[in-house]
Image (cartoon, rainbow, N blue to C red; front, side, top):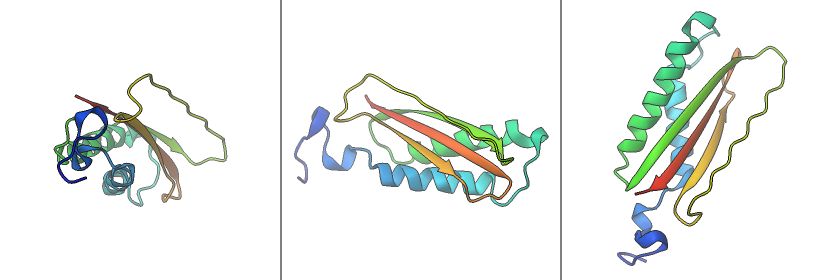
Length: 118
């Protein structure tokens, strides 16, 4: 489909690959959180750095999309957490991915990425 227009008038190369987004999110979270021990005083900074890192990586893809990124950091203490979100958009081009980063022993990081074709 090289050069042919697909959904939303976008080429195959212009469409978002959710596997690529998941990899970018995991890279951003790992670079910020890594193996740090949960520290309530640092959560605001970490959260800001995670969303900023995700947005920088997404922008570097140079695809014709707007992105929204949210992040939640929670201490691992045995309590459950549930999140939900929904959108109304063009399902052929736009999308959402929620990534739960659970590689850290003291905290969970949940990142949601939304993309909308422009």
